Length: 103
Image (cartoon, rainbow, N blue to C red; front, side, top):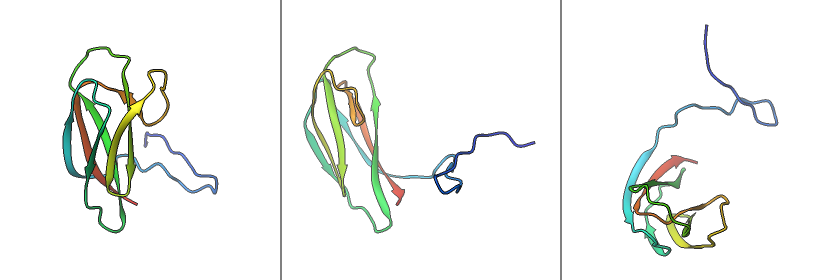
């Protein structure tokens, strides 16, 4: 018997691929309270740049940062303390890991 979860798109095609292999391009450190910064990477055809923020602290802060990706560039910018939407993160120290994923 197989166990797992399957999901489908609006056309009825399966779209749950489980674990997806990635290629890490690099990483950079972010400081507590940091709300600006830019990092650029070369993105080969057929891939897209994505990221993870990994925290290195359990300190609480209300300061938030926005992290966006455009092409091969990751940009950190100011986010309102009340913004808990997609693309906003606590501005605590840690790392941003840049990786490639098939487009």
